Image (cartoon, rainbow, N blue to C red; front, side, top):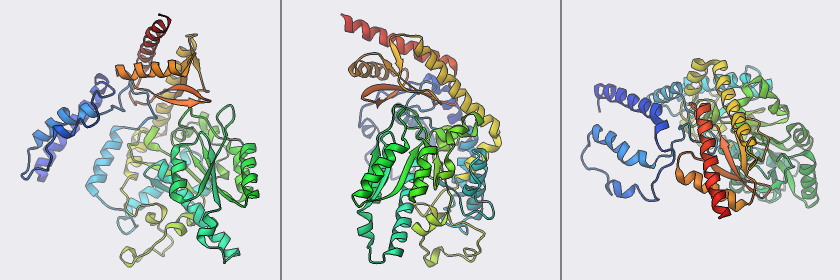
Length: 480
């Protein structure tokens, strides 16, 4: 494909994408296909000769779209949002065209420097403490990771490296293996499964702290677990506090947990993957109170801030905690400016060496929406979640199962878990809307999350009417 054809086909693809997103409401939100549907539809080997672009485009509708779950449909209320906006998509196109692999400042200076500035822009939107911003004299700064899971792992590995060096400095006879077998990390029993996965990869023990009646980790429970572990000869070193849990969007008590971590010399990492976007709104900033106690903080603009996947923003108070854990400097990656003190080599802040020019997406979105436009997007979803909550409360057959703070409503039919499992099966098998469940205090609960950028009150009303009709038929069948 030459430039002339690329111009023509590129315009056609933009039209296809715009048509898809404008018409996504009319597509069935969840596919009908069975596992293995795709393999019989395509040849078993790659073509020997070039094929026509028109044939590839035709096959998108025939082969790909039948197996797509339409996350941007206004009838998609599952998981958490995956952000999407036209400015972000345009920036992604430019990122692909530039095609740099930004493992060092020299590999593409703009890639590194724009990321540093965008992370400061966003940090100021969140009113993060100055210690987390790169600025000129700060020891901290921000980096774009691929996902919140990756950020948690990076934080855990950095904390493991830091505590190991500290212990070996005072007790040189201690081996890394002897230290690692005693290290223990902590998180709420409501924390995302990626925290457990980070501990598995990091080779350390993880203790789940029982949450309270509001599904929050409190200081007393954390302190009790720590004291038991210290008495058993273990070394507490890392705590993950979740702001906006996946199950019910609950919030660990930072103002309680933070001081304990600081007193005990434990690394505190904040995972606000979903909820973090809301903190740009002054009325929700209180949910981040206590961030000053943290060593690292992360959330996903690619969930709720209109920046397409992947873009997971992570800040640290002391960047050398990361660079000392991950730094390697082979000759072929060195460059003449690396010791100037004026630049960042982000390969020392992450697991992979290579990285995309992801800050372009933030730059485009922040400039084309402005802070006020992004706040309006968040507020609209929160307003619609409360609208759905009020509809549920008007039907005495249903109950709300957790406080509705942001865009997630946890609800269920009053009755057995089996009844609610049957309701969810009916909802998802009809494929008019899509939901996923969670378990709260042994109750099977349905999660309703505002996800689509284009969702409106009418979609919420239709979804609730659909749920009620399915509940009607289910309860009638139970009586018969």
